[in-house]
Length: 217
Image (cartoon, rainbow, N blue to C red; front, side, top):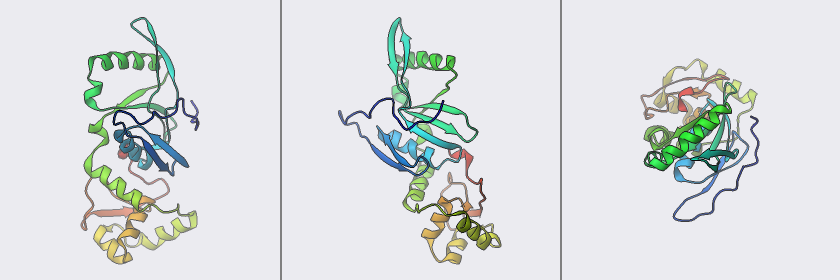
């Protein structure tokens, strides 16, 4: 199932308090549309997870049957993972997923997609809004700069190699810039566990060409 830029449907218009917007995705080299604040937060996970190679919104529309009636469904996102596999994603508050009508509907949708070989996963606020991780992903986004060239990356790896591992505070003192440290972290020249709050005592290690926290997503 190839990843195309064309959406199966246009984003819904703003109504009934629903928020929508766009996210400038470097990973996809285009704007990604989101249709709720929970979707927006999920996009941060997709964008910064090394386990997700590419993603797109409203990827396709399927026809399925529910209680003998034809229905249509468009998942929120399609992900191509680092191993080349594809997953469809529904992002929805837990309380809405638990509604009887939605439980029945998504059971039918999941069964239909499974027969087509397309796994559907569900992300709720419990999995998306992990406060420390999400806050630090936003921090990475604030310090995002143009991608280092291969030469620039090798230069940084060589420069920092003899100092690693070290503490976050020690690295900031060495480079004389906290913002530069965040930039190096965003570019995965250095690595640390973003699920734990970064402090001056946080240990950081040197990255490599395949570095990144596969646990982000």
